[in-house]
Length: 168
Image (cartoon, rainbow, N blue to C red; front, side, top):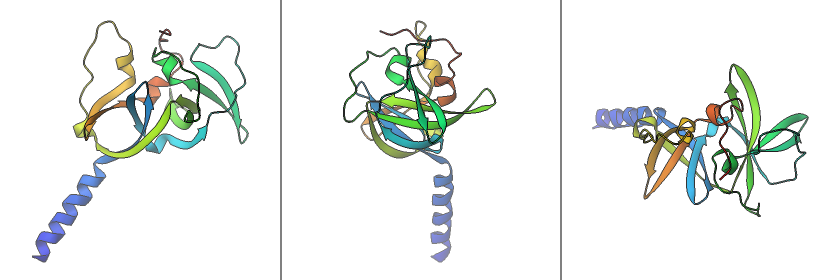
């Protein structure tokens, strides 16, 4: 009997090791997830310093304890209609490797939702739509309970030299 418990414990540990944790957030009534290991902090919205001649989705920059952090509005990055920022609007500060450089950036989202442990095996490929470039930003789709979560590829989302998405 004890051997069965040990085997079950080992299987549970292996299952947990195959799962990644994702911080999920809301935008336009859809839930998106990003690898929680990339998240440095979550902050309320605050005014930013504008950066001249930047793409429309770059709202500006903040000084975060001596580090200049560009702030990206994910709604605009994805071509989703912009909304006024409210009390639930947050900036998720992330650190991500882009073209062999570690970058710190802030992502403006409607609201933080939850943290889920998700196995990469459960993520489904994104359907191929000929007229959309947004698929490049998505690592996969996964069902969590009754809802679907879009798992983002942060390196591609935050690569500002990649093709820009126009505002809707």
